Image 1 (cartoon, rainbow, N blue to C red):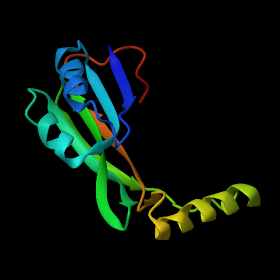
Image 2: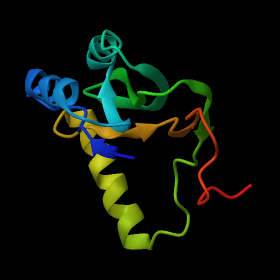
Image 3: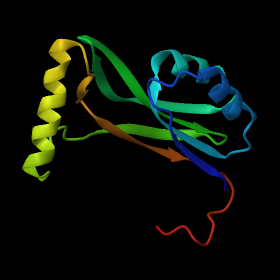
Image 4: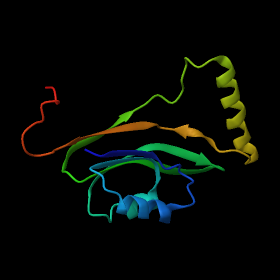
Length: 138
């Protein structure tokens, strides 16, 4: 089985080339992170089963947009769900939290993007068909 995983970077400026790569790739499952809404709509035109969930809300220069997790599959996706993740990480060292606070403060000066909010992960159950392989445990 061929599984691809790719963080697209939500501000990727080469989406046409990325789309061409994905559409010509020989994969069974392709997982993408930080997919912009416009690219998600383009991915939905491909002849694959697709599942998507909001990865997070991105705030740049006081404007909010959503970025997505996307799973493309040659096999039927029988179930998928997003999993809420905590945004603030209390176990980070104080220096890391302080730097994140400074960066987020630069949002007011429109110098830096504010952090992500409402973060999510995603899972999908995919039906392979045929007998269950020996390596799959119940």
